[in-house]
Length: 390
Image (cartoon, rainbow, N blue to C red; front, side):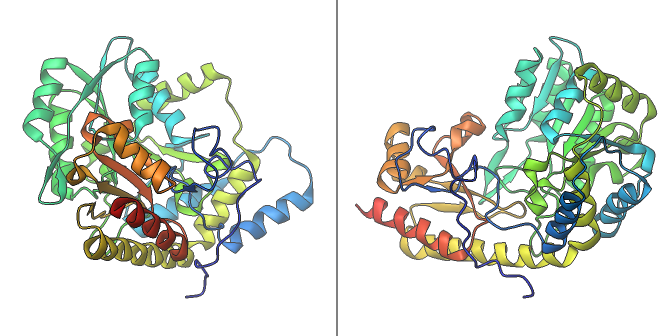
């Protein structure tokens, strides 16, 4: 490999949410944080170089993306996902959750129903409720170690609850599904049948493992394209969350106009200068880095799966097809919720994301971030093994 992902970098005292707020979140000193979707790998050197060059210029005035920025974004999605787009479709926002909130406000009114597929990224729950919309849940079904969509329930909920908007998580966080073209087509056709707009969160699209391929929902048909909003960002892929740069694809002129009008109400105009610099550099020069990163994380996943089978068969990994987030099933331990929390956080001194944060379907599960040097992953599993065996 050209890039070194084994190097452990001390992130303490950098105001890192992941690493510097252990006590504030109620964990003890020495806890190993593997919770929030934030990698422990530095961004590609080409991105750092671009940021340093911009910093040395030392003027950070209002910045607006030009054609080369849009071309870099469009080329990335064309080359990696065969998704053809136009510059005019792209709207910049400071984040994907912000964009989802704007979509909810733009395309629905208060008390309208919005559907999500649980267990799912917890801000989906929050952003629906805070905007005073009705939250409707289509629970995913775990069969044979893989989560599937209950399409009968999906259509029933849409019809009975008069759902206006559906938030698709693709790839799915936390269960790691990479949806097939057939599944996405079923989703799209049901949504078209009932006039439901699809807002697709594709933020983890660059993390897909052997045997699977991410499909951009909007790229499947012209009808889907005109009935959807595709939310993307370089933040997860290149570890740039703090730079707040997202690119939202909206091909439908009417939907895009409504979306942009809602953004204007917030007072948000120009994007983060450094976010634009980093995004362009990442999409221009980061492909090799991403390919090596995926290979490295997949080896981490292999290690976790083997370690659990050999040392803690009671804990089962729901093998992810995509994302760097591992969905771990602790239910065989037959512990009460608080006992399970204490096992992981107090005995093992590990900070994982608690499963029920993603919905009631997450009871008995934890989400573990696998985007760290292998030595850190090994340390986490040794701690967990010692706690379980005790």
